[in-house]
Amino acid sequence: MRERVRELELIKGEAHQGPDPAATERQHAKGKLTARERIALLLDEGSFHEVEPLRRHRASGFGLEAKRPYTDGVVTGWGTVHGRTVFVYAHDFRIFGGALGEAHAAKIHKVMDMALAAGAPLVSLNDGAGARIQEGVCALAGYGGIFQRNVRASGVIPQISVMLGPCAGGAAYSPALTDFVFMVRDTAQMFITGPDVVQAVTGERITHNGLGGADVHAGTSGVCHFAYDDERTCLADVRYLLSLLPSNNRELPPSAPCDDPADRRTDALVDVLPDSPERAYDIRDVIEEIVDDGEWFEVHPAWARNVVCVLARLGGEVVGIVADQPAVLAGVLDIHASEKAARFVQFCDAFNIPLVTLVDVPGFLPGVDQEHNGIIRHGAKLLYAYCNATVPRISLVLRKAYGGAYIVMDSRSIGADLALAWPSNEIAVMGAEGAANIVFRREIAAAEDPDAVRRQKMQEYRAQLMHPYFAAERGLVDDVIDPGDTRKVLVDALAMLREKHADLPVRKHGNPPQ
Picture 1: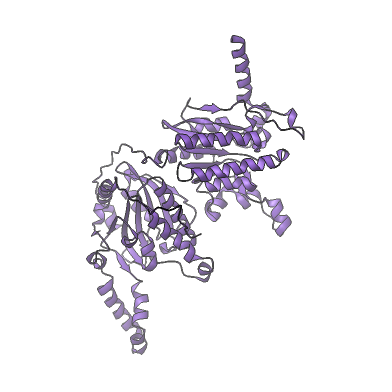
Picture 2: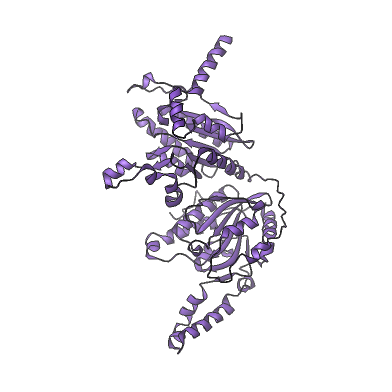
């Protein structure tokens, strides 16, 4: 037995070190960590349990039979993050460039099945060259198994993809199916067809990062939720995100001790709105004042910036906040903002995270491009997401709430549990000037001084239909609150709704707009 144990130690040592020390040096020279170094940063110290470290491929041809390294280029297993179980798989670029073959895929399938069975989050650390060409269709079938499991686990356990190297072709679809995508600048790229193919087909010249780098996907395509300059910072934020999420859809998000008093006054919010309703302000100042200790984690901070989506805590409990951003495009909803907010609302609803919606929206963005590219269809995604959500939902109108955008932003009429407003609220079909131009257009056109009549009619419209208590008088707003009481009101309301239970009609699934 002692002889066998020594043999086992040698074999496992070889599996841990990798087949070639020079490959480790090349990985570090690119500014990249090895698979095991990444896992060590992600998980609590000493908590990693590896699954199938001795797995080797059984393929032949093209010289593969002479190269059968342990792990087959992917390290899989489980450990803990802040003491809670998390499953992980990490591509090892030192072995076959992290390319996926039959054995490689089988290991990933196993750890994905284990994560689903255990009801624990799954994190993938991606740094691979795609399918292993030498194994042909077996490699492609391996990707199919991953995609199927991504979909099966969607809404059941949190799935996080961390892009730390190249990810091309069909391999890019797995991250797109997960809940959150993290990318590291310069070293990570994602694309379906690479720069060479793009140039051959279209004649366009572009670099790898220009086509599918972190900043492109974080700010232009919306594929990536978070972009970082280095792997250590990236993995630290993955750990922080996991601390805000439940392990599965049967649990509530983890509570945390809170030293920030639940009844703390938020008097700074009294002065946060500009004197003129036409002037912008940063909605993040409102969020920072409301949440525990001013700490929040923004999702998609560089994409569709006219809406802000954050995870934070109120009274020690996790909440998802969706807020219009008046500092960008006056806070209007457009195609990308609708998609971003809808996806976030669906995620929060899937994982029992209450929703707080801060409303200051003048409407949907007008324009030929928006209409032709489907603003109706994309705006309906956000409407569908809110209407379908069964978690506690609280909306707070800060200032403008006009037209269909007001309805879509979790108004009382589509099922918000509580609809609140500040005394500065302007809830109406449209702004006073637009309404006056339509309702009183003949009087204005016939007047000797059209501008004076327009101003008079605007004042009449505001006085009759846009005063702060119009919606409250009709039961469409539950209460008009002092901005200084905002935090206390929200914390108390969320505590009241914590045990909310709502059932949807029996159905196989809905058919949301696409």
